[in-house]
Image 1 (tube, rainbow, N blue to C red):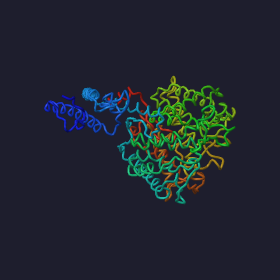
Image 2 (image 1 turned 60 degrees about the vertical axis):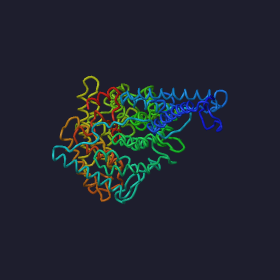
Image 3 (image 1 turned 90 degrees about the vertical axis):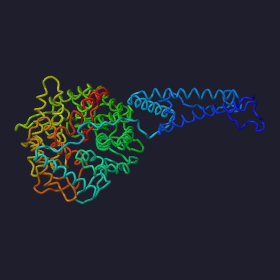
Image 4 (image 1 turned 30 degrees about the horizontal axis):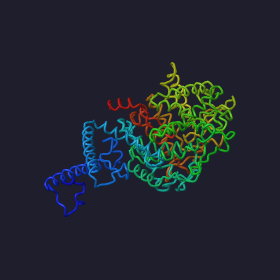
Length: 623
């Protein structure tokens, strides 16, 4: 009797077997095995679609269910008609089929979270293999999304507070609707001339107001407007521009705004855009010290510093205000380079001697040495100190280096810069080569909120003292508002020449819808619940409505001491991102964007506290 082959139709038609019945039974058995293996393969492919065959075999079966050897030559199955080859193939099919069934059975006995972990682990492995082979992918690694508590709030119980909060939301709607009507897609709005306005800070990137306002829209539950903004970001936000941008401004407004929108909403487009922009900013760090340039051409990757900065220096508040965003970029992209860049800045700073313990505003990125010894907690320096404190808080209070740097710097500021006027107003002066300039900027008024936020972590018994200082700074900044004709604060105010908390120079009398005073009111209310902070905030609302509101939006004012306002015709994007958000939260309950779960970047974009995996699991169990 001849040996049956795998392909019976290749036998000679005129030839008959000595045992026809036996031949057919064997043939059926062979076909059954082949068919069984084929069904298993198909079932696996359909069940695990759209994952790759490599992923499926690696996670669930740890080897291919059916391996086909297509090689030719001595090691391959070269002759399908040979009996030895047929038997080897059949044995292998049967063996792999049994193995696949056993492993599938083992997989189904696992808990869902174990299966999910295996899938994610294999995806990461394949992604790494693709990168090692030079395969470029636009897909970000999987990151499990968890929305922190308090993304949206509820109506305050007090009716008066509820009315005021609704009024602030109405202001936001007017500012947003005016922008969409007259300047949609532009960076900012000109509310008097009713047209778009673009600052050179953003190069030719568009939509600063849209990105800056995203989280405010979400927090105020203006979801229809939020969806329209999301759609614009998806279709129109483009970073492939041949233009020079401010690293600082693009980071705090665009990267910060996109990150916050992602953490509030969970929409993947925001994570993707944030990481894309972050990658385009990385060439700014290509300096001898790793301290980034202030300006960067996004296409060429060529950077430089502001021509007016001391000796070609980088500015403290600019290179020192990247940490929060870049730590989150590393978390969401699983690319450690972002975090490494900002941690290196700390290494550079820690190697330097600080005059009187203070950080000068200028640092040369080539030599790694300080430039002009000018120290300010306002413009050029402000948010560096803010980010030291918030880096510690955002790390769930594990970043001890940031904590030490912040409290040491605050002590040096208190010793060298904080003074009290003859009229009893506490202010933060500026330091120039050892001499004090008794001037305080509107930007410096954020410090009251910063001190309050960090008071409970102060070393020794200084918590109460720092809260007192925070309250005094808040009072001084309120005085700078109340001593103007329009009850809105000037850009800077002085404590010399017989004046206190008043601007004496014409180029310091303007108000551009800044948020820092409101920011401090919001923090002080959260930590003290003293009603005067809400009263002061409402005074600002009334002044904004009376003097800044136009038919086409809200405008800044050129001179807050003039009886009749002269408008500057710009609705700044930070008015929607910061000023209105802080006002809204001032009249919201404390569990709306709670401080133990969120940290604001310097553009008021809330970013979540990064907890350890163990702590996150414990919190989830409690919730």
